[in-house]
Image 1: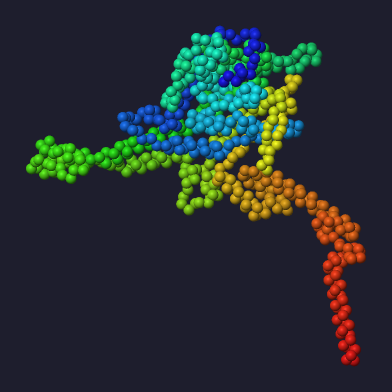
Image 2: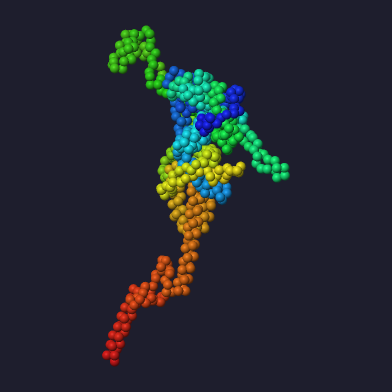
Length: 630
């Protein structure tokens, strides 16, 4: 989280408004925030154990102590299926203008923000964000400006923040209402001392952030030090206009965002000590650059609870019953015998299945010497109860079989499966709405960072719908805040960039049905638009626009056709209709004469002439015969 400090020149820091005495006060505030957030940290730590299927140490049951634990992946399966649904609907932003003069900028921002996301690896961030939301009950992202990106020009950086590493005032529901935000990060001692010589010999010390229980890697914590970034807001009065009567400046409150970095009581950086930022703040938007997104919201906290919290109880009972069933199966498959001590039985020979003869030195019968100890099988109702618990977990998590593509026998059509999935897709749609709201807040911050920092033109390659691409240059000259006035204001709408194969198949079937009904024919534009108003599917607006365009083109063509036919009626010899494809143009005869309208083509006139000659010859023959008879 040291990107903010990279953006500043340490040589410009002269007047120290913030000192080490303030750092001591900040540390006391941090302790208060940490105490109020302990339950969230502990729950998130436990949930990660359940996600990794290492949850037996989180369970109160002592069943199976000292034995290999039975672990089923019903909870894990539910989480990864919901995560797959989320990634199937990966979001894309649509920047909308609030004024006509901002339309071009809105279209450009709509095109370049996905390019920025691709450059900074946002898809991986969204992947991690979705997992945190499902497992921990919430997720945190930071939207910062990093001067080290884009070959030194700087660019937007979106990252995941672990909930264990961020602290806010207890009892609030929106982190923007917190007086301060603290974010922790571990640095290697050697790197830290090189960057900040004043920390030489002062690294290490106690860590405040909660650690995960079972780590996959062993890290030498003695070689790392916890560094804190603190963000806080400060309100100042800024002049906005001059009183025409008194000539005095009229001021209005403005909220500034400031930044402090400290470690083990030592101040490392403070934006209020920076002359360039003291009266300006870190970011012009004045907000904390963090988006906290809860899954299932709880009162008086910006955090929430997730699907692991819902599913851990049935998952625990499923595994306990699994352990009992497996143990019973092992006991039933291993025979135990009660042996009479008065009978001299060679136990080694008895236990050796390769020895066909077992000597018994007694006159008593074998039944009197030994008796097998029976093991009662697990009752059927216990196994049925385990199956019911699995169904309960599926129902409470919304991870029914149809959501994974499994259906009743006989249902194999893609559209039928898609219809069943859509009918049970309320929870996935809710998840997407939650993440889309979070993405919308991120994109608002991205637009504001572009407005503030894109002072130099930057090159972007934009892909076209036909598979081609173009290169464009963009800077903030048309949207920046100037002369105390705010620049262009935008709205943001989030939609799915990707869809599941079944959703695409269902949409393709919808398109085929609409085509078969004749809805795409230009002459059916009016009833087609009425029908579309009552339908809801992805891409409906684009189809509506295309139908309207086709209808306009057809109307224009009909008007041109009527005008051309009128011209032909007034000037028969021009043949304009034939020249534009509305009829056949008159063809001159061998003498170069153009026939009158209605005389037909040269071939038709030749055929007509031939017919007339034949008729004349026949008439002459008939007349000659009649004269001979008479």
